[in-house]
Image 1 (tube, rainbow, N blue to C red):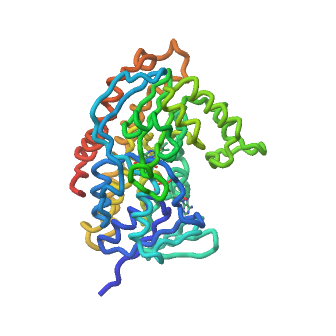
Image 2: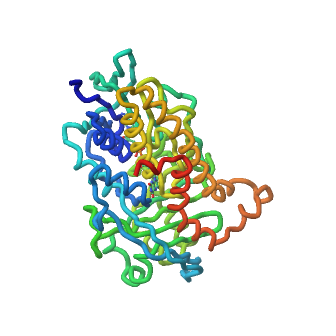
Image 3: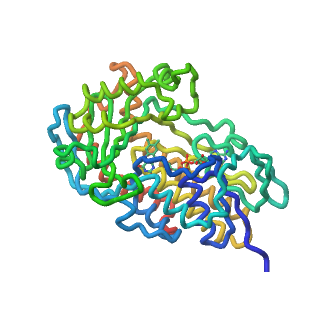
Length: 417
Ligand SMILES: Cc1cc2nc3c(=O)[nH]c(=O)nc-3n(C[C@H](O)[C@H](O)[C@H](O)COP(=O)(O)OP(=O)(O)OC[C@H]3O[C@@H](n4cnc5c(N)ncnc54)[C@H](O)[C@@H]3O)c2cc1C
């Protein structure tokens, strides 16, 4: 009998781990190669979930129980004085990057997750595909999956023209330990999904698993994402470290200059509801520029792209990880359904995931259109780009899972859950 087919997965974050698990669940021998030398567990940021993500985790053998996320029952919007403008019921479950990472990582045999392996390039021949790494080693397989994120080395080799497009704003991100949240603020808003909408900007805050991924009361974290329009000149200045070095692909958080941090904290006090400002100024915030990315092709011989390497949807739907999960599930199922014919399986994968990825990007671009428009002169903006309907924003937040579900169903992808 033929030994199981081998897949190399490039990128050991959530997208790569889910691709490896789903391929393994359909009989593949899948091994993950991650360029970082150390475990990636320190990315302590919150992640919204959707039912499709939870279903794919279940397929990977991971039960999404109360240790995996925190349910928020209500969403509110606070004004500049801290008064509640609008409140609505909601049903979102908030998890954390490192909680999902730990669950996926622990469920994979240690020898099938290789750290310190940076892909340099890919070669193909009639027998399959070979990955060549920066350390000079080579790995051969029947399939290579590029799950190596927005700056994908795999995509850069096959689709150098597909580049991320800056959306015109950054997301400031911050997490504070629950115990550090002032008591009165904790009692008022900790368990609630909270929006602040300063003119031209958008902030959301919600509880997440804390350090050590703990979801117990008292040991959780409070996560903030603050979208701020930032033109390219300002962005370039913010991405320049104290030594004057410019980090074009994104500045690592420890290198963000202290004056940049001091300015955003001063802005927090001036612009945000005091409850949120008091939390934000106690954190060590960092920022990520927001991009759109669409790949016109996802399969190149025996190479396939998934997750952020394939399409980057702005984070407003909180669905980037869900999208990567759906890519992983459909890739595994297309290959399974094609029997031994890998090329046919990959063609089916591309046929479904191209329109799916485009729809996810379009939905999230629409959700961020108000923020992108803030860099235009006021007289060139539409009425909706000047004034927002707060009820509508909170309602859209509550409807995100339905919207993701509709995109999935329209492409027949719900068959994978
Ligand atoms: C502000 C913000 C908020 C977000 N909020 C949410 C949310 O609430 N919910 C949600 O679902 N998603 C959210 N996302 C999106 C989410 O983080 C990603 O879409 C998702 O995790 C998929 O990531 P990925 O694994 O495809 O890529 P990444 O997480 O970028 O991982 C790529 C991996 O590949 C590795 N790599 C890169 N190059 C190489 C190479 N040459 N060789 C080997 N390894 C390599 C990298 O080191 C990295 O570990 C948010 C994103 C942002 C920016």
